[in-house]
Image (cartoon, rainbow, N blue to C red; front, side, top):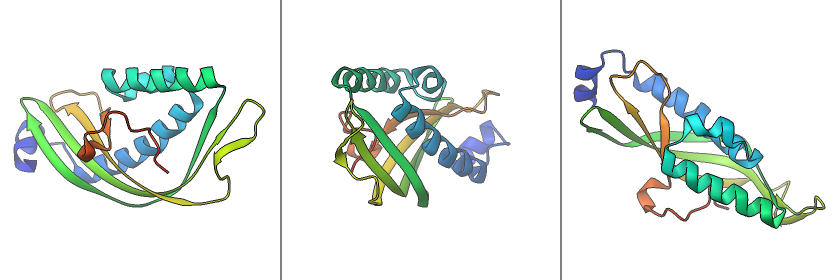
Length: 156
């Protein structure tokens, strides 16, 4: 598949993709936790965006606030690459250390811990039109291998 991608776009670089995917991983989690739909929109696929918007609306209705701090990305690797017509799909396995907790309206922690570091494994799938000059890859799904659309962004 890599050779097919290079035939369509000789500038494609796995190392640039990996670097960008780790930046996207941290940024998307941060924006989701902030409820910042405006900045999330250009980074995620339409279906995933709608899913995020629903989750953000739901937690706002409950008066809850999610917090996730990425302590570090321990490892990441590409687990799948596929090319469908001119769209490249790349699934990346992330192993990270995160601090995850939920606060209520009063600011009290109602789940998780502000001091416990959790190891979190996710598989995120990104897509991009290989002919596009736009450097942005869209996040298509989270926990891609599990094919579970109901998973929360952060699993504890």
